Length: 52
Image 1: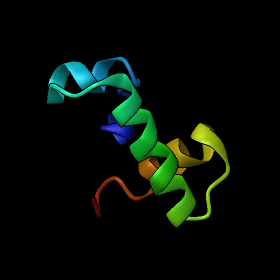
Image 2: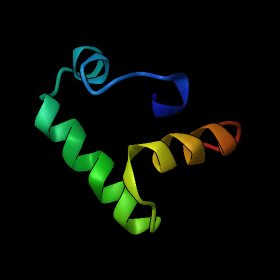
Image 3: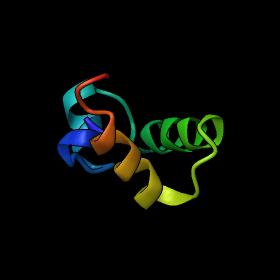
């Protein structure tokens, strides 16, 4: 969903979860991939969109 430009407000509405849950998952993914900030996460998601 990040690769589709969904925001932290769009994702919870589609998945029926809270905004803090989405933000926690974004932070966890960024940490595991050693990415710094949401911009790097978006770039990663767009670059690997076909693989995910």
